[in-house]
Image (tube, protein in one colour):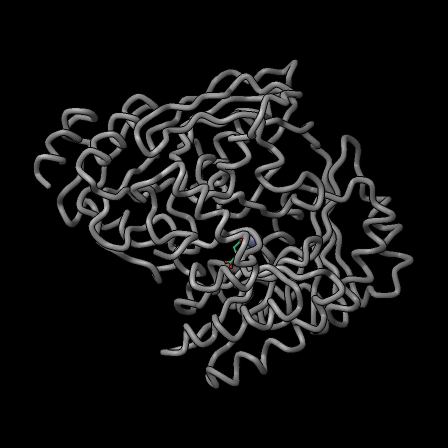
Length: 452
Ligand code: 2HG
Ligand code: ZN
């Protein structure tokens, strides 16, 4: 192994090959604290050429690689299983000037979402994807997992923002397609193949993204409803009546109680309600009136509060966006991220507590997520030794309702065992053939997405 570390040191310099346990530790455990594994070393290249040389060195040595961006992933895809070289892309922070004619930009994989937003916004443009982990999540990781977030209802997931990619293949070859042509039918779309491939096919080093118009005027409503059927009735009204709709989110009474306790937040309403919806409208001019009009006629609304100033908007979003940190402060949850057709959502939410209780009687499920896509984040606290059974029971329930076992976080190591619940044998076999063609030695992120 010291031959390999010597070669890696020659490529990136001694200060960017970490071998001391203390220095490696922050890279070896994921954000949830549920996934952890030892890396033989952490290597931090500065650019695509260094990444290519590192990948080639590992291929020559027959040592596997775990690829890591901001380490905000939730499915254990970015931490080693044991013994891999951990390839951290945090130094790939090149940011090219915003191309205002194409409304596109090219950035290094290690640029955080927040930095990219700050880069685009002075030009009257914005990134189509946004999510709570924006300050640490990197663009490379967001593409590798095809991240979704809170604006999918308007702009789609990360793959819809992609116009080009540069990546290093398992043998160290660089493939680069960063022109960002709006139309380009010249064969297989490698850019889209790599989106959502979770580091198993190549290491993404640069990304070209389309940008959307910056919409400075925002109005947010926090709406109390009787339950999921009411939330869906409100969603239907919002979809029909709000051309400026930019987010439609859901959380339940248990989640509100948890985030209020964690953040010392005031109760949003005089009474408690079973479920809450956050609707956000974004436009060039104040969309408050159109939002109020829809709230005024929807029979699903039990109570509502609306804000359009920055502080008020942030205050309302906090009830939804602090769910993850409030849950994490309460324990290490089993994190599941599922989606079902919207007509199945109420049934799924109704069935979940009993399904979880049957295998983990003391567990506390906290449900929230992205209403527009039927994407529920099922976080289960206090599952104790029953984490696997909880995962198994919930994912089977989702499959019975024709859903996906991973909506936006990816499959990672956490869900690889259950991939066949969402993908047919023929599909998994085709995926394995693609993996074998691009990474025949199985060096890139082994055990992620496809079980060994
Ligand atoms: C969100 O929507 C993120 O806030 C995190 O996808 C979800 O913590 C989770 O389970
Ligand atoms: Zn989410």
